[in-house]
Image 1 (cartoon, one colour):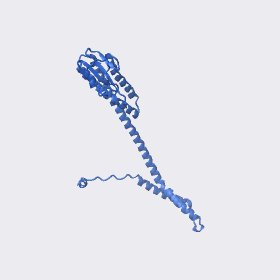
Image 2 (cartoon, rainbow, N blue to C red):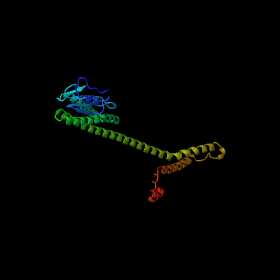
Image 3 (cartoon, rainbow, N blue to C red):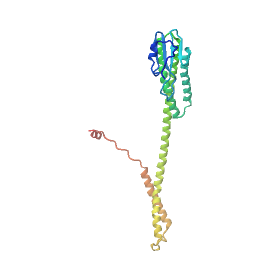
Image 4 (tube, rainbow, N blue to C red):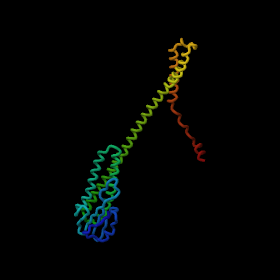
Length: 265
């Protein structure tokens, strides 16, 4: 909604002309001893549109505001809302544990920190225009403390987010490493017994066909001896195959400087 001055405010006409259809940035207007502050409400994460508040100080030093009422307490209540928001965010930071919670916290702190920084600049400018107003000096100092607290809180939340993401990535990497080691061991085990299983299948089928015909004369053949020979041969082949699989690949040979220069040319 368009920022409109209340009709009962006796302010210079240039103030109304400088107000646009939107609240715009936070700023100070000064003319003929009148001071008008255009400020923003404490922002909420995810809402790009800002809600404005007007604070008018007449030449006699009396404050009026829209919509927080009259008197210097109105501007103090405005600053107090920022302080309450900081306390609420600090409690959320202390309770944060997951990356999602830290991200939501950083997302909420960023616009509030930006708005507080602009609020501090506006109050500093207003204090320079009206140096005799002690309330402006005190509020400027209070907002400076709020800005500093938000800066520290933003850094702590960002560090917490980075640590949580890095810790989760480290745990995921450790799990992948353990799965890779287990898979490698399983491959070695399969390689060791694969020849035995293959020989057993092949010779078992052959012997069954030969024993089915009496004219081959294999009925008196020592079956345990063939079994142990086949087991020994299969185990030997399996150990050789597992050793080949377990062998580390040779590192790539370094490329000489002359070869690199020849490729570039």
